[in-house]
Image 1 (cartoon, rainbow, N blue to C red):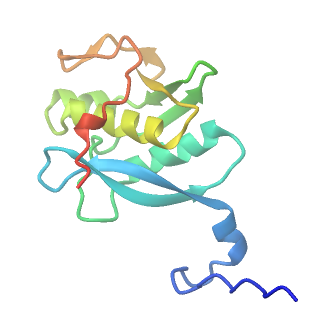
Image 2: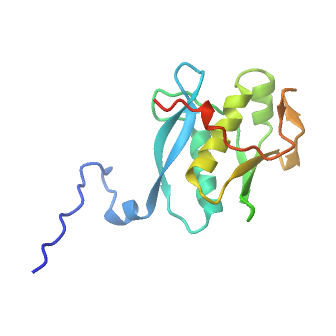
Length: 165
């Protein structure tokens, strides 16, 4: 007689979360600003294990926009909305953000480099299908943002922006 495997520990689950919910979820690592505002720092979050990588990527970016659940700080300008996301076969994720993204960076309420790598590192770090990220604003290609960051090309992840401790 085979010994039955022990049931999964339910202590971690939120009340009312059934086994099916957990099975339908996958853990992702979001990169927010560390408390000191200097580096990005990881925070684990669960998203639904939907069929398309585009949909999972959308959930992940939305979680970044919703902000951290820990003492970390949001890296993206407040009010930024995700208009659309598309993952191309060549590994480029096109992330179309609302104009609040540009406004927050140009007015200095958010650091552009951190905001951009928050998205790029989160997407490339969680999805094998995503190698680089092209940021669009309200559906338009952008040359640069705040005069110092070239957005005309897709951006590769830069894990040196992340504080791994």
